Image (cartoon, rainbow, N blue to C red; front, side, top):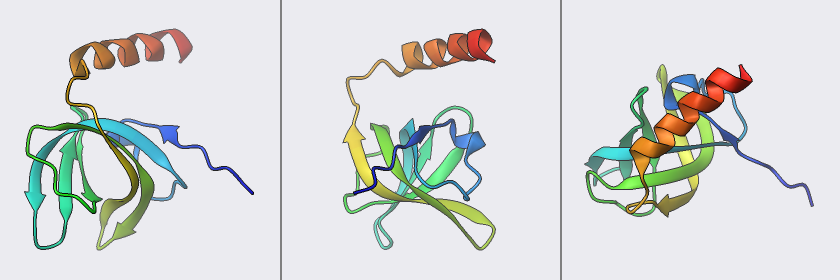
Length: 103
């Protein structure tokens, strides 16, 4: 059995040709008719297909397969984790520090 690992990315880095990505962001809007969430991580926003409609302003971690449709990148979610009590601002600071050190 092959194990696929997700690549942690900022939303602005997701191009639609990756195999499996993960990111953390805030739900900024929902579309109940298509079960699509718009999630923003501060670097950009992306559409995410979901089996559950989460509340706006909820912090989520998404793991899924991105694809392009009509010039737009959409993530077909495999796992969505509720990170409501997660310190998103501290996470962004750590990400920024990691980029300075490792790149």
